[in-house]
Amino acid sequence: MAPPQPLASRLATTELPDTVSATLAQRLYVRRDGLPPARLDALRRLATFSNPSFLERERMRLSTALTPRVIACFEQTGRFIALPRGCREPLEELLASLGVALELSDERADGVELAVRFTGKFTTRQAEAMPAMLARELGVLCAPPGIGKTVIAAKLIAARARSTLVPVHRKPLLEQWVQRLGSSWTSTPRRSEPSAVAAAGRPAHWTSRWSRAWRTTTRSMSCWPATAMSSSTSATTSQQL
Image (cartoon, rainbow, N blue to C red):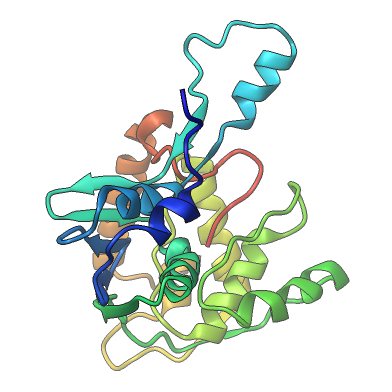
């Protein structure tokens, strides 16, 4: 039986389209129309990696019956393959190596302007992380507990000056974010609207509209099970922005 050909060899002998269409939203949606099986396999490999838990259990001679060998972060949805947005650059590099152009439609929501100013103080290690995070529009901040990731995120949000969604899966984490944002920001409220800091810090003059929103949010978050977070999101030792 002949050994399987490497992926590069299979792609080199496969007829490929001149362009590949993709849409950038909450994920990267690549249109599957006209793509050969070898090309689809290459797309799936961009979002697939070995499961370190499987390798660790195998090394310790523990059962791996319920532990997947690989972690797949792609999803096939109708005429598209949905990839994590972090796969954009690897996809562009792969297509460029094959002489295929990428037609990308950016449909991300721009959010609304957030008029806040960061007033907190940074440690030396926090200050070192800021340039690297601000230099790119997508990234993961991974640091041990206690390093001050929430404070770094507060500075990033203020620097971007855009509304930001912060998913958390525990009520204490929600309360930590509210406390950190309230103590790290100052804001000039818009006319007839409470400021972002007023919403976060919950001062005495907090409006009833924000109070109701806070109670609804905390009740919803306290009812979420631990498994409600997507399996592709790391929530063990780091927070992602």
